[in-house]
Image (cartoon, rainbow, N blue to C red; front, top):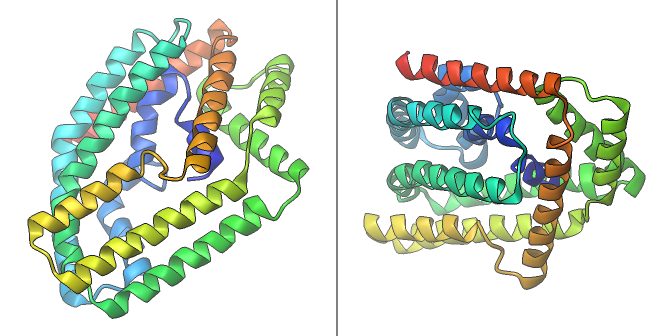
Amino acid sequence: MGPAGVAWRRLRWATLCALIALNLCACGALKLAYEDGETFTLLWVGRYLALDDDQTALARQRLAAWFAWHRKTQLPDYARFAAELSHRVEAPVTPLDMEQIEIQMRLRWHRMVDQALPDLADIALTLKAEQLPRLEKKFAANDQVYRDDFVEISSTRRKKDLYNKELDRIEYWYGSLDSEQKALLRKTTDALPIDPTLWLAEREAREAELVAVLREIVQQRPSREVAIQMLRTYTLRLETSPDAVRRAYIETLNRANRDMYLTIANMTNATQRAHAAQKLADWIDDFNRLASG
């Protein structure tokens, strides 16, 4: 996830419930993710690892079980969480508010990952050494796309792209911003301490670490319990960069993003907040509908 993705995690109350779904499904469409999520995920994994027939069958079985668990247990929880947030959607947002909600969201993310780790470990234990170079090549190709789109462009282009992305995201929830709000958004996005080179370095380091963990599993063939712990340790390290410079950068960027969204959220008008409340209500309906489907 790039700087814009980090920023997206800091939207106000109206967007927080939707973010859970956006973290869940790469396509960004909850209904589509649940109708075709197993197929999409399996195809995505295949692009990175080229699973053989037995591995594909195992992955398909585990994905079906994970989606069934998530539908039955997590979507109702998301709906309840969203209902709690809906009572606050039109109230002013404080830094403490955002911190508390981020904690709740992190707990839900950990719950999803913890449920998946045994299955991921089982699949990892079937991998062969010759499958890992494909993963490395795919990571390298993705990094080059990121480099082309975010690093090797002018500062003016980068600021314009970031502004447009954030405007689309905010207007999805609040409806159209007026000229004053757009000017404020442009001012704050322009001031964000974006350093795509540092972000790319962090991304590459995490990818290399994942390959190293999988290679260790392939070579040592540890017990299932040990493999689960290795993957759990890796996922926990994703939350805080081990590199001091990059860690400081990410923390600074997160604070700047939080300040930006607090400013924008707290200057919205009644019509815009009502628009956000309706969007949140729509997500609640989707969560409930999918949970009962």
